[in-house]
Picture (cartoon, one colour):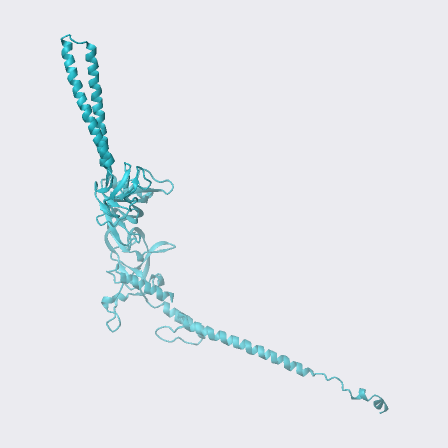
Length: 462
């Protein structure tokens, strides 16, 4: 009691409170519960996202023809739907292999090359008086193009003609004198030296007259050159010199350029491997047909014939140049134009022909899907021959009359079941009749088969 009274502050100060161990445990468990809820929300979100993706993807749908069992969960359900879808008959379009003529065509990029390209030059110096053509005009050979001032050359011609007349008169007088001297010499009345001198004078006048005549011919030719005409028939280009300018020979760009268009040639190259079959036809006297198409290789511009071959192969490219001639009546072939030249080398008769889309490439080589009578397909390896655009000839592996798949083959395999919409067309209520079915076995070249092919490709990509 006395001790407490002596030290009252000490006795009143409470000891620091100590937190019981139970409180710390409660705080830790609360954090764990919070993290558990977060993880649970994330897992739930992932499950929902997985269900959405599963339902959106094609394998998440229920198979046609009935619901699958759910005894072993959603995974078995998905696998059952995919298997049922794979076992369904696949819609395809087919074509019948036909028998006919297949042309052997070599296609090469060519350049339209005119047979003559002439830069018209003046051969005289003078003032350009007139230009008688319109730019881009078609002209014929010897048509007037331009006129140089002819007056200086006309004056020179008249001077030469006057000199000729004078010298011809002197020659005539010298000949008469020579005749008299020869008569006197016969009478021994004149020296022979005088006769010889007169004979030499006659020969001088003969030479002078010939020189005068040459000058006249020169000035006449100058007058012809003053009238500039077209050396070849063709199309004139842009005018390079305007009237009123003083022109001289050997102008840098000339007066105008004329390009011959009819006939015109196309120069193209072929591989040296194709040379033997070309030479075989050429040496046999055959006139090989050549057709020029535009750059898109879709529009025929003109048809001509092979004219000649170059005399050597280009060692850097292993190709040979050929020239084909075209009459070009419509002027559709233009100089320096790029065209696709198709050279018809030969024609294979009674060839088995299928659409090019029917021939596929795989690890075993080229093959086709052949339709069996039970509406299944079998893989048939084939050997192809010449190809002509949308048509391909089959050298071996296929017979005429067999049907091959031309669209929808990306979902097929050996023995797969198929259905051919063209064989079972819907009625008017079904949205498409028999006349609207694409890919029928007969008209396989129609554009509808290609449209259906693109439509199936779009569905497969989805």
